[in-house]
Length: 100
Image (cartoon, rainbow, N blue to C red; front, side, top):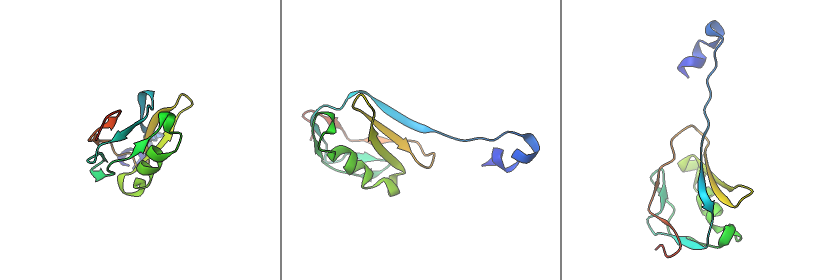
């Protein structure tokens, strides 16, 4: 914001892109009951390989207006989390096979 306030004088504009992508494709499992993003508890969610049932993405996106984080899957089946407002993305709790 500070940079963009004087963009007409400096000719410089700033923007942000905060995104994180999982290392591997989503494998069937569950999030823990204390699974949260940016301090907002999402809780336990059971999901399938590649999140075929859409449960993981839907659970994260159900609170995206509060967390500022939207979930999607890339072409390789990896979970992609994108911050819509430039906030960092803090994940607490756990997700994966046998979590709970």
